[in-house]
Amino acid sequence: MIVINPESLIEMCKDKLIQIMDINEKNLWELLVNKNGYTVHVMKNPENGAKINRTQAFINKQPEFIAQYVADLEKRKQTDSRIEYASVLEEIDKDSKLLYIRLKPPIPFMSSRDLVLYQKIYRLENGMILVCQRSIIHQKQPPIHNVERAEMYLFGWILTPQQNGSTKVVLIQCFDMKGQMPQQLGNQFTQQQTDLMLAVIQNLSLQ
Image 1 (cartoon, rainbow, N blue to C red):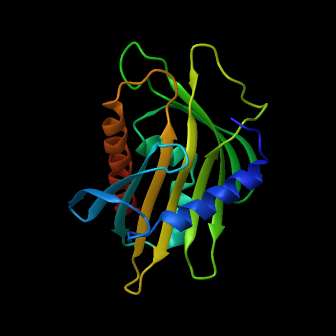
Image 2 (image 1 turned 60 degrees about the vertical axis):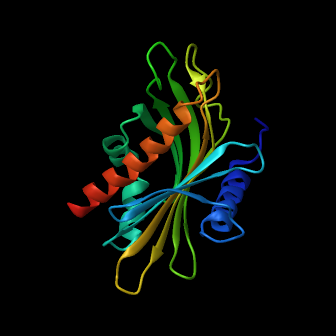
């Protein structure tokens, strides 16, 4: 991974998410699922060939409320079944954090995966809010023996207010688990992203 300033990386992540978030002829999304009020699309990242997953739903909460929820690592641990361990390495400011997340082994006898992530919340003039995460290299969390350092190319919650008071919630991520990985695990990861979206919807409905 090339060492680039974290602010530059997260800014590029935000711009890329905005560029590809819409379903149109320019963005070659392929529909996988359309049921129970949510959709799942996939596309190939033209930069590296990795799969990009896009999940969309509508939630009857305001964007800021949802943003604070999905940006909270403690709440993320409650909704993301993949997480083995997670901690905030540094709070840079009220909207920016350095995170460490270790994921459970994708299958038995395979090593755990971990990520060092820079997270930032963006609030745009049109009312849209983005909660973005991007892998970075940082001295606060060097690689761990027997844990594979994965890479999150893109991760973002894109929250768009609707006229009826609800929020369109789009979750996009492009993730490389690294190491030797069976092909079928790509489909498993897409399902896990859907599970994360559904868990967030369910938990927010109780708030």
